[in-house]
Amino acid sequence: MAGSSICIILVAFFFTISFADLTIPEQEFLHECAENVGEKCGDQWFGKLFSPNKTIVSRDCCYKLLQMGYSCHVKMTIYILETEPALQNVSRIDVLTKSDHIFQKCDRVTEPEDQKFLAKCVEEIGAECGEEVYNKLIHDGNITKPCCQKLVNMGLKCHTNMVKALLRTPPMRNVDAIQFLKKNKKIFEECKHTE
Image (cartoon, rainbow, N blue to C red; front, side, top):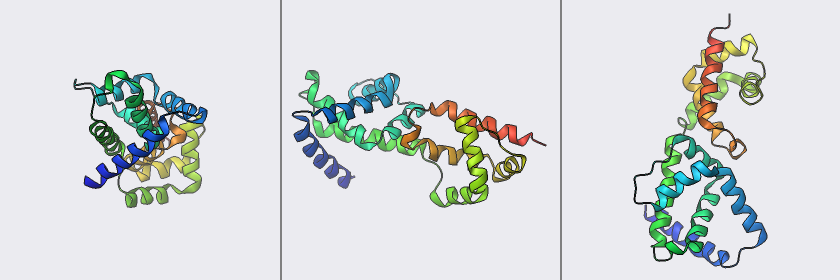
């Protein structure tokens, strides 16, 4: 925990200096961060970070926070601290520590199984069938009968954990994680019923 606090202090120091006068690219970066997290999740995150109420960050919003990345998360926190007059007297270190805890908790909530388990799942499905399943998830493509059989033999736990890992990547930031996980289960069930 002490290492995390030192990191937060250093990050705060360096970012505070650069936020004194935002450049156009920095403004665009922050705008993109805010757009990616969205209004609903931004409200949850802001409430959890700055409100004394017991605001909850949903699992879907946790995926959004992770998809936008740690850099966006920290820079948005610092920007709000620097620009929001009502927050001028709050302890920046306390807020940054809380912000870091929110990000870490979201990381734990959305984390797939350990890497060995995930690697075993990837090996079981194989590249060709993995591509078919991915195309079905993303583009509503088709899955062949042999690939459906591989998916079912691999098991729902493997399939779900591979989808969780995929959801945590920045290219998936515009995907509704909850709907995507439901689609994941639907695909698995359809494959179970393929003769």
